[in-house]
Structure formats: structure tokens, C-alpha cells
Length: 302
Image (cartoon, rainbow, N blue to C red):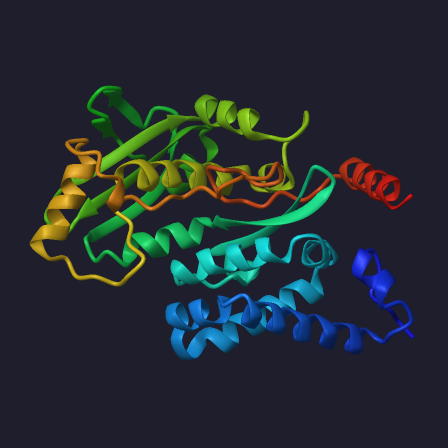
């Protein structure tokens, strides 16, 4: 019969069917959160959706061997990461791109951490009710007429012929938002600045798969995340554009206040090497990195 492989937990359940091993994970996980009082916190945050959220978390553990390792080495780190996602009311399904629970190795042991994804950041912005427009676009050679580094005022002349425009090289990216009260903010970053950012946060000497396969999408995410993370207003709860909220948003956008209570912490307590802290993009391991991890795990089991 097929068994769960590649994890320490699998060794404990060697010879058991996959279904049985998965049942054990569910039972152990539910017992853990009930014993430690975490179940009550999930219920407080999610209400009737708590059971569905926890079920998706158990499924994630079962489906990913690295998460199974975390469950064996440090299950509390999974629970704490999940509680942060629940506090922000963001789904943890990786396919949705809103929030990630990311496994990583720390001093020979596997742990998990929480990362807000690009779409999750957009979701937190929309919930405020103060944005009229949010957008990010590429800027082709010749379209930027002027850009003031101090005020970040930009002037563009967009090419009308889209076919000809696509032939021109991309000079940079501009992210922009407009509030319902008319307040506007934009930032412009050149391709050189974006490349410098990518090199700063890459692991090893080569670009991650996300940057290699779709550089333009990753560049857009990086610039928009910088705009919203630095100047925008984010909210866990759904709100309306009342005068008080609008004033906070305007003050943040113009740099007039530095009120931490209105700014959501976008970074995990410890960002692992396989996550881009600016985009929330989860990088996939290279073959060499997987081999290094396998060697390390083998040495620990000796």
C-alpha cells in the first residue's frame, strides 16, 4: 500500500494507508488546538467558518510533505500562522494568492510562517472603502515626460497605437491610487530599480521561477505593493468611506502622520528565504536546494 513518504511523521506511521495517516493528522491537530485553547480563538475570529478553515489547514498539511514535517517539528508555528490569516480574514488556499502559510527550515527544524500575498494586500485595501481607483501599469520608452522624486508627481504621454506601443521596451512601472475624496498618490520605479530590488531579495545567484517565467507580472506586484504598503490605508474589516477614515487615508498618503495603529504589519515575524518580502511570492526550491535539504535531513536522522 502507498504510504506517506519524505517526512519524519511517515516513519512513525510506516505501513499505514495514506487515508489512515491523514486521519491521524486531523485527529492530532484537532486535539492540539482544543487542548491549547486555540479552537476558541479560531471560533472568535471566524465564527461558523472556523471548522471549514481548520479543515483546509489540515488538507494543506496532508498535501504537502514539507508541511507534514512542520507538523512534526513545530505544529504550534502552523497554528500561529493560521491565526494571523484568520485575524486578517484571508483564505489560505495557495491557489487564491491572498495568504500563504510557508514552511521553511530554521536551524535544522521545520517551521511555518504567515505571508500576505499580493491579492490579499489588494483585498485589505478594498475593505477600507476609501479607494476610488487602484492600478499599476507598465511605462514604455518615451511615455514618461517628467517625474519629481520629492513629490512623486509624474506626467505621462501614453501612446495611442497599442500595437506600436507593445514594440517599445518597458522603461518602468507606475502604481497609482485615488481616494473617494479626490486624494491621489503614485510612485514610479524604473526597470533598473526593480531589478535591483529583485537581486537584493533573491536566494542564491539566480532569479526565482516567478521572476524568470513572468518578470512583468512580478514587477507590477512589487511596485503596487510598495505603494499600498507605504502610503495606502489597509483594513482587516470592511468599512465605509466615512470622513474620519478618509482623513486617516489622506494623512497617510501625504506623510503627515506616522500612526502605527492604522498600518497593518505586512511582514511575517521571520520571513523565510523562499519568500519575496515585497510581493509575498513563494519561491520554489531549486534542485540543488532540495538536495541540500535532503542531505541535512539525512545527517539529522543519523
